[in-house]
Image (cartoon, rainbow over all chains, first blue to last red):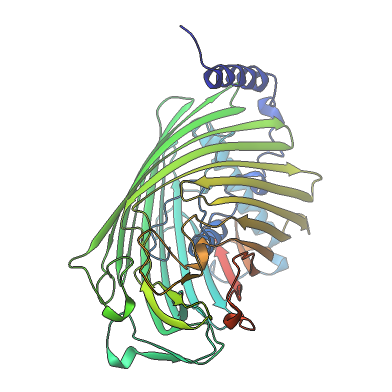
Length: 75
Length: 445
């Protein structure tokens, strides 16, 4: 089976990502800093929701961090 | 007595509560969901007590948004969540918006005064715009109520399923969304792969009914019945613990909306070669849109007091809109992490949709293609400057602590319009941009 260029690149990138990830990270007892509130990806969910609502209603882009649906008739 | 705020003398009691909360967290850690490397739960595991919301985490905020000379809004938000001992978690949230003010209708400023009928067609809603002013409907008002929820369920020690939904109602708009996602941890939970899907169903009932797209504004041709649009999307994400102080996330997402994508209240000025406004027509957008985006976020703790969150996003769609977004947030903590200040800077730019036009030239014929003068589809840059201050306070009831915060943001859009304008429009501020402030107070416990 012949792979096209995009599929080949995806395969190489995927393999590199997975092999790279396996050498990254910390042991369970090294998670003290990561456990801090500010290191959570959703540290301030309400701030993010209020900002996203403002940007959704004023710009042509939305989403990325999470689903892009608006649930708002403002755009 | 526990509801009464405690002073410095109560420190031993606070310490005892924190130790109790930490003990409970440790006891339940074995069954807690395995998602350290992925999006962490918003709720902390609280001791179980009877009483309303006693063992739920509550996050609340009241936001006030004000645009310079245009719309203002008040938005209270509340979010409650709970993590159960078996690792399941529940989240519910509710938002209310009350908007009022003047909303730009899409028409250009003119050297002459301009009179418009409001969307309702009622004589009392007609308005006249003075020469040189940006046409905006001064009678704009809307209220919105939105409620949502999600349930996360551990399937195995390293797999989590999450399902959720959202429902919102406005005066002229109803929306329902369902979503589901699955996350898999591996590499000692340093890596999380996640995949999610959403489906959105919207129903529109424009005030005065939806106009015929592209039709002459003066004829007020309206369509019968309501309108619908639906969206479906997918998001593939990877979260990786890089080092003890560095967490990164990369998401790819795609979504497609079909149906009525017009703004029923937006019109476009028709200009003759001398720059005089000779009429208006309703905007007309394609009835489908596909967007793709890549998002990358990095969180780094530089010292015990200083951390940063940097996010980058690229988005493109088949309307020819391309956008770049960069946001940097710093957090500086002090007083044994009891207080912090969080400055934020955001930079955004977008290109215009291929059917965006600030005006239509040539009165001889109506345009037959798509067109919109909605400035949100034009080319512009936007900057946001923000700062947040938060302070830990004694907890309510059996809770270890609570947090009070106040936040302010300044948002400014600057248009990058390259369209040559007729000489008759010279001297008018055709693209005035937008300036807005947001003030928010928050309390979580």
